[in-house]
Amino acid sequence: MLERIFRDTVAKYKLLKKRDRVILAVSGGPDSISMFHLFRELKEELKLRMICSHFNHGLRKDADKDEEFVRSLCSTYRMKFVSAKKEVAKFFKGDSLEQTARRLRFDFFLNCSRQYKIKKIALAHTRDDVIETLLMRIIRGSALRGMRAIMPKSMYRSLCLIRPLIHISKRDVLKWLKDNNYLYRIDKTNLEEKFFRNKIRHKLISILKEFNPNVENNLFNLSKIAGEDYDFLYNYASSIFTSLKKISYKGIKLKIDDLKNLHPAIFKEIIRIAIEDVKGDLRKVEYRHLEEIEDLLINRPSGSIVHLPHLEIKKDDAFLFIKSLIL
Image 1 (cartoon, rainbow, N blue to C red):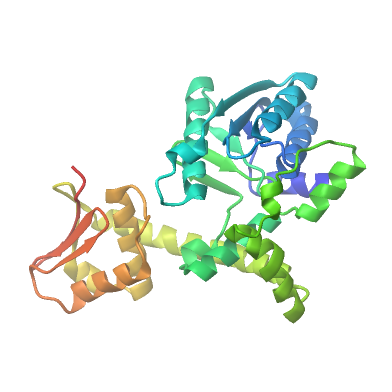
Image 2 (tube, rainbow, N blue to C red; image 1 turned 90 degrees about the horizontal axis):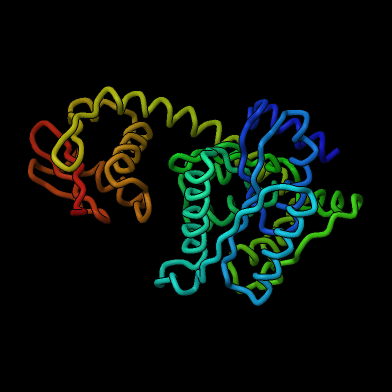
C-alpha cells in the first residue's frame, strides 16, 4: 500500500525520471528513513544515482548519535554519505530558531548540490506535515499562497525539491517501518509542546477531530485546492507582470494606468511578484502592506511613498517605482 502511494506520487507529479541524480535528505527519523528505503527499492528500476545527506543541527544531546546512525545505514547499503554539523543556537539572532535551522540546512543542501553537481533534493515531508503547516499558517495569518502549505515539487534557488511522501500519513509510515523491521531514531523534542508545531500536532488537531473526525482529509484537500488555484493565479499574474515590467534604478517600475485596470487579486499578486523580483523574497511583507500599496495607487497623490522592509514604493504621475534600499 505505502509503496504504491509512493510510486503513484512520483509518477503523478513527475518527481523522478530514469537515471536521475538525487540527494536524499535523511535526518534518521521515521519519515526520512522510510524515504531512504523506498528510494533504495526504486534505485535499480530507474537506474538512480543517489547521495544521502545529513545535517546535524547540534541542538540535542542525541544529535551526534543520529548522524552516526545515518552514516552506518549508508555504509550497510553502500550509499555515499555526506554530512555537516552546525551549532544552530550560535547562529540564532532572535528571529526564529526554526528559520535559522532551516536556512543553515538549505545552505548545506546548496553546497552539496554544487559539490556533486546534483540539482534534485528529496525531502521526507508527509501528509501530516502538510496539515500541520496549513494550520500554522492560517493561525499566523496567510494568503492563498501560504495555504498551499507544502507542495510535491518546488524550487529553492537552483534546487528542485521533491517530496514523494506527501500523500503518505505518519501513521502509515510507522506501520510500514515496523512491518519491515527497519530501525529509526526518535527526536524527543517532537513531543515537547513548547514548540508551535507540536502544539498543533498534539493538541489542536485532536480538538478539531471532535468537531469532524474527517478534518485531516478536509485540511489536506484544502491545501491541494489552494495550491491549484494559486498556481493559476500566479502564472496568470506573472505573465502580466512580465509584459508590464520595466527596469528602473535599483528596481523596477510599473505603469499606473495598466495597474488600475486590474482585478484587486491580480494587482496584489503582481505586487508580490514585483517585490520578490526586487528584494529576493517576501519575508516580513504582510497583507496590510499590499493594501497600503493599493491605496497608494488609487488614492494618494504623485510623489507619495510607501516604505516596506528594505524597499521603497514611490508613485509619480505615470509609474509605480519599486526600489531596493539595500546598498
